[in-house]
Length: 240
Image (cartoon, rainbow, N blue to C red; front, side):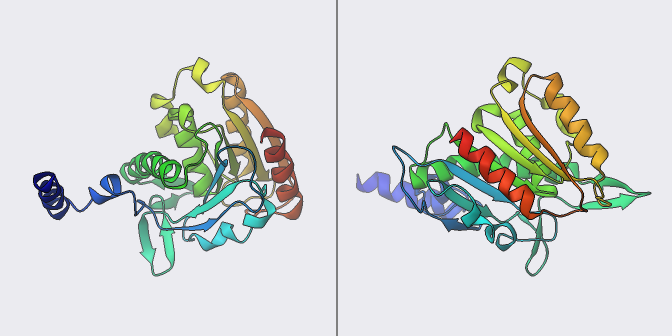
């Protein structure tokens, strides 16, 4: 036993990433937590909030109490720092109105999110059959990327004002696996950052693969509105 303890300590010293998986005390991403306000039966469902580019874990956490009371709500901070208090899932710039992304960073964030979900489930003894991602803008992009490539990790996603990356299509799961997914899409018809055409393309893609879809358009720009949050709460309540 003493030898095993020494070996673990040596491994932790030489590999700083290892404690995340050995000890389970720290997670891969910074986050804010709202514990269930009203415990339900069995393990709690999990709703993970993913902010947009330049934001942080506080942005969507302000809406945490609009979400089902029996759920564990976690607002995650993206791994790439743009400046103090501003983070991203990947760097992006716009050329002639078209977003150009750092695909390597987007893939790293997708892998990190898979591991983060595993860590959340272990640390909080949450229900692996009721995991939801709720993302805005770039957070919605990451929600699409994870769900379409690893549908077994989530029950559903809520993609607000986002788009599906072309880069994710080669690694999409088989159609039969995708059909278990539930997807809520909400988008502003006057969105000048990510136009409504992206939401309509995502709608067509999900329908093509038999994904269970709840689709909404709102007469606003690149933002969320009260009506949308009411629709979100009702959709989640129906699934939980």
